[in-house]
Amino acid sequence: MARIADEQLARLTRSGRAELPDLAFGLAIGVAAEVVGLTESRPGIQRRLDRFFPEEFGRPGFTRRRNRRDDLISHLLDEGCSAGVAILETDVFLSRLFALPGLRMVSPPRVTVKAEIDSYQLRNLVVAVVTSD
Image 1 (cartoon, rainbow, N blue to C red):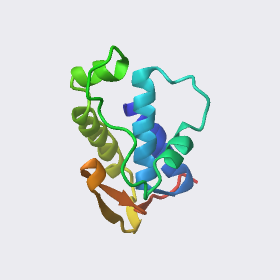
Image 2: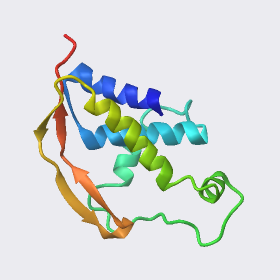
Image 3: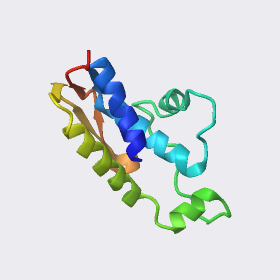
């Protein structure tokens, strides 16, 4: 998790600015890929998932299954791997992000409520740092 967070923040420090939701999405995908063993899959999973979950997707086509199955997702849910992992990811990522020298917000976020997933969403929050050049 820490390595993947550092990789996402390296993208920010190389370019000097990035959308925070994109960095966080990259972290979530990277951690999930490590957990389920998709580390050697072909590149582009973030782009494919972003197309699968557009901003205005209505009701998502995925939900927790009504009946447990004998698969990795059911096992992880049984073990309680859900919100706790997300909170840990957030802690690791934001601790590192806020430690970057010169971090500033370039554009404020647009916050939307996503009733379909019982959550909120940040869009267009751009952050910047001094590049290493």
